[in-house]
Length: 527
Image 1: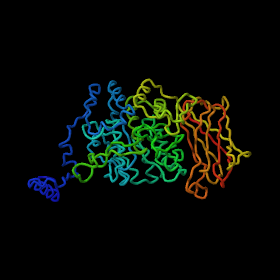
Image 2: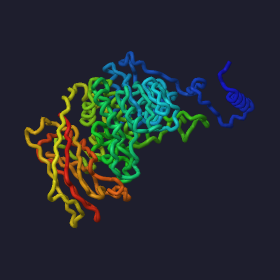
Image 3: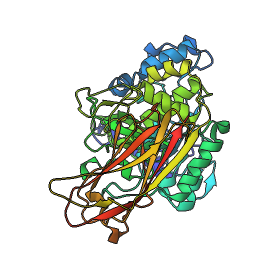
Image 4: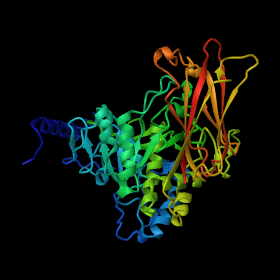
């Protein structure tokens, strides 16, 4: 006996009657229970790569419907990376676990169901592990599709299409306590296509529980090699926002990712910042979305209703990087979290080459506030990783300086900046090669958005930390906004030697508000 309910049986009878009577212009309805309905009927034949013998896999048989539309696979040289892995008997990120911290994922989706790690997932609505909530929004499903949609004849192909997806639907119940849980997973990679609101360009301090969770994941994840945290840089570019104002995306232990257009230039919504590590496509992305409850002619604006062709934002760019990281970890599982960061930076492609912001840092690496070190290059990253020697234990060094004279910051005509200097002499630290720098300024300036702050390394590399910008009166000390205590970061100084004079140059670009700088602290990290 069929398991259909009386309502569904009646509907099927009615549809059959309409067809029998020649009334086949009526809308055709599919029902959503994937256990009862064969979604693949009347569609191209499915296939499934066998990772038992990767070297025998023929990429030429990939025939997923929208595979030709996934331009980013070419832009990031993902197909070339696949070929390298297959030749080394590796297989599309096989069994690398990627935690998608987002809204809930459609675990029954035809393109995702085979790659879902339900036992490793967590339902924040019920507080139950090994469970996935029914999705209400497309976002998490679209993010997951970029990473791990199967190469199976359906829809789209994920960058790491043999990786395992864990659904952590934090955005369905985003409490402080849940943030701590969400950052502590069994996943190898944690994708975070979310962050504070981009409405106003204000300072957003990282949540303390979330920071603790990341620190624990870095220390204990992947058997001590560290979970890889990938973070969307932010979509507030049109609102004068800068990714460095976001304490989530600018945390030195995450990989901040900017978004590109289909032409490979900065998307206008993508936030720039000295904290950006790399960029990836984030415009007109074909990916999965929630399987709708009903289908009308199985067509949604010219595309199958289970998919979208308009997913965009740094939300789309971040999972591009997570997918590449999954490939990288399959290629070389021994890589530590810092090794992954360095490999991505050193193998990235310089794009939009006429952009005037491209500068070589003291180690000869090209870097740009809009792009970080450039477009993620999967092929180059895999090749670089092959003979990569893991970096030594991290060395950190903190230096600070109090200022009592010539420390006034105010608007002047003509414009005049004030330089503050911190010096590191030979022998003061064992650090010789930087990986990241944090800047903390203790200041009583009453409107920080008036200020342009530039950090200049001993080798002359400039990191623009803040820029004078409009803030709709949201950035004043009266609204609780203050430079003091906020941690800015720069990822632009990879490979540089920290010895010498550091300059912090500050200029006030608007009248009325003023203040003093009392103390500046630099936290330097590397080897």
